[in-house]
Amino acid sequence: MPGTLYVVATPIGNLGDLSRRAAEVLARVDLVVAEDTRRTGKLLAHLGVEGRARLSLPAFDEAGRLKGVLERLAAGEEVALCTDAGTPAVSDPGQKLVAAAWEAGATVVPVPGPCAAIAALMACGLPCDRFLFLGFLPRAGAKREEALAQLARLELTAVIYEAGNRTGQTLRDLAAALGDRRAAVARELTKLHEEIARGSLAELAARFGEGARGEVTLVVEGAREGVPRPEIDEPLEEELARRLSLGEGPSAIAREVARRRGLRRSSVYASLERLRKG
Picture 1 (cartoon, helix red, strand yellow):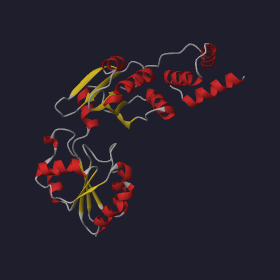
Picture 2: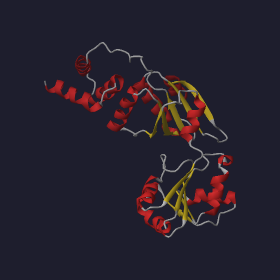
Picture 3: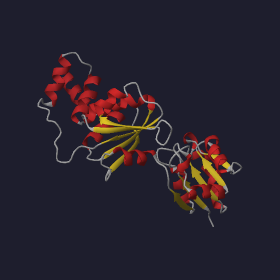
Picture 4: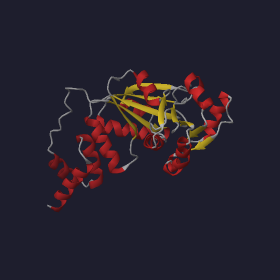
């Protein structure tokens, strides 16, 4: 009979957040599968079970390393899956293993606990009855612009992960695409230098313009229900023609106009091309 895969949430900073149940599972299982066995090894040492068998499952080779884990599950063993910090598979490795374990007939058991997205949401004071978790936004290009345009239309609080050094740029991009909505920057949650800053996107973009230290979670309020977006009096094609006549580059025009109007960059660029050829 196939064994059991425990999906174990681990602390995102404060070791005191590890649940008693999680500690018991990590001490009992036959194998601990971790994003980085060195980092998880420190947690196991803290629990006094550093000798527990471990196998790494990094994001860059998760699919390639599933076979060994599935073989042990097929043999009836108990396996614990954990990530460097927080909840496996939530913007971290693990989803492929969980899906494969289901397909193999193993029992999958969640052992819930710390999660930066939920920690930021519960403490920021913004609406959290309905929210959308986005993980990391695309870094650049059309995919990022489309993600921002889609976000501008949603009436849901958004939760976004970001690297500290890219926080300032992402806040500026969000302000340009969404307008001056309320938001929060939560960094280094549960750690010594934990900080949760609230304000408008423009205020936060100015405050964290040079970036932020540590791991960052952004929480941004959704479009307010029943409140129309600001009207743009100038017809789209007239604006495009005017800006072309001023010598602005097509790519820059398409990017800015798409964000401000909540349109797809590709469709704005297509309109620009028609104007240039016409």
